[in-house]
Image (cartoon, rainbow over all chains, first blue to last red):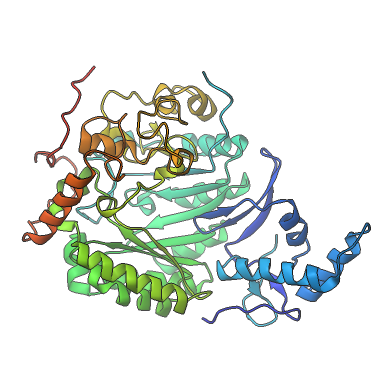
Length: 108
Length: 378
């Protein structure tokens, strides 16, 4: 195994064993992973909803930019934040790069 | 005073205390529950329904050895159906490819396999069972069928110097996570403490190895590692706080805040036969006794870490100080901390005694010494 290093051409995806899921009883989005659990904040949830195993990371950023209608920050500022956030998740084994890893991304 | 309590995050389902292994540090209570008292499938599925309805996210199937239960597949399937993320905590020795595939097909998300050492003879000696090769085989099968794997490396003075080999083994097996789990001194492990507690030098060496490996293996292997309590400065955030994050159900249906809680006498735990999980979570006298911060004595009460470590571990406070309601002696603010540290050093430097293996109905040995005096039964 090699470390997943994400760039805009990567295709971020949740690997098998990781579930990004809405908990109805708690009305809350969570990332469930082997013996770990993350409660992403609202911004992270917005980004993670765009992670579908199809879109490139660049595509995620574009989609995000399209959602910000009032006072959008420069794209590179958003990109830096999003890449850093997703890289951190990849280092914790919550994300893979479906463009590189042959492993099939799990359906949500 | 009780405000509405946040629901727990995860359910620890101890399906059975039966296990072919006899590890002398087993986390099960000294008084093991017999198979005749185990909850039936119907009761477990009802519990899973209730857990999901409460908003719990995950269920960890554990034991003993959870795969002794023939209905494990059914329980995994049901848990998945009601939206719980399923995890299997196993020794692996009873699994084969067919059963693993059956579990994965029913929704199992992750498998944790425990290892006693990296050297076969020593591993089998510690487990009291010839199972090391089988464990390796099963770990490989887990990866072969595409499930994520955690290697659980239980470390102590008789194998802690093999941590570099454990790390290598985990990478070689394709694990995504390794838990370098220090033996926790409750129950069986407390009885065998002198056989397990590492020297301070061993610990320092290991910590260095882990810190280096975390950098080297970033993004490749997630490494969970904590310092053993007796050498810690501050106590561990045990279970994320008493009755705060987890709910543990014993094979016979006792609902506990953690697997060791029954080591504290005078706490009455409710049963799934009598109440719903939600009722127990909200109303259990034992849960509410040490929940939150209201129960805390000094120095916890005025400590700025009181909502970080939640007072450490109640079972340890009882085991070492004789009072579950006092400061965890793992904390350097405990008056007992220095004595605990010294005791660990002393035990670790003496010759390791023979193991007292975990067996049903063989607990006749006296408990390890205590520093404080134990409160008489109420």
